[in-house]
Amino acid sequence: MKVYRVEDVKVRDVVLLDVRTKEEWDYAHIKGVLYIPLDELEDRFNELDKKKEIVVFCHHGGRALMAVQFLSSKGFNAGYMEGGIDEWALKIDKSLKRY
Image (cartoon, rainbow, N blue to C red; front, side, top):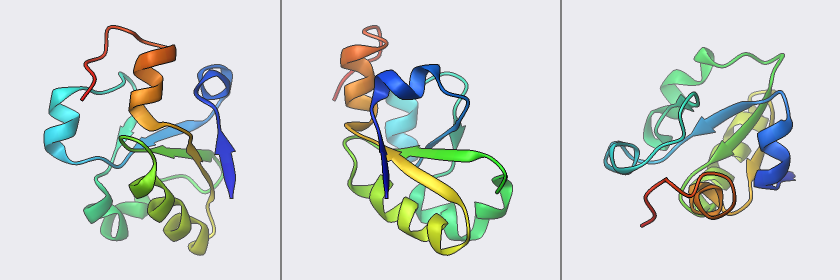
């Protein structure tokens, strides 16, 4: 399973996929990412392009790992962003609210 550091994701041509809950998304989110909550992924994974590299994230990483396992089983090139949105808020966009 691929693990991406937030610093690397920032400069790569990948699809960032946020799998957090709606409440978490409403509280803080990264602009321009694709949002599919984990509990909807099984029904909506066909919205993703198998030709693209998918980097999944959540708050810290647990749900992202589950999403990556699911997407990999469906033939996607998927990995997860280590540290999730919390790490992004610490290292990339300090204006994001942390929780």
